[in-house]
Image (cartoon, rainbow, N blue to C red):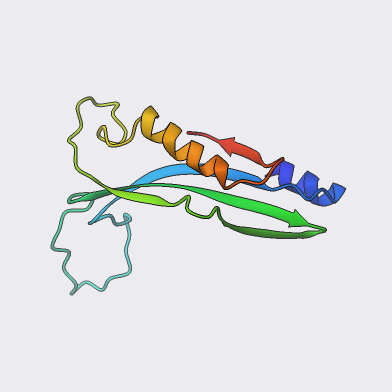
Amino acid sequence: MRGTKRSVLLGVDRAEVYLDETYCNVNHVTGKIWLTADKIRYGNAGRGARACIIAAGIIKSKGKVLSGFFVEDSIKIWNSTLKRKQDNDDYHGNFDAVQLERWFDDLCKNLQKNTVVATSI
């Protein structure tokens, strides 16, 4: 966010895009949940179908006002259908460089000129 703050202070109208990917299991829950003792969890936490998710969020400053939203058509969600082949196989082989490059190419078509892209992917 350092760049966004600098853009605001300098009055620069430059969009900054942040990329992220994640996954979520159908029975995903946190360690502590807001249920009373009489409620029963029928599925094991972290078990069941998995969804893979990738999206690009954009932060833009205009004057000293910040706004944030998702880049149009950047949110992609798909069912994870493959089983893990290796222990370091993050998305069980359901997301790879070819998919990322295709998604990123499509994303770039929707970005304005001079947009800064930050990624940890």
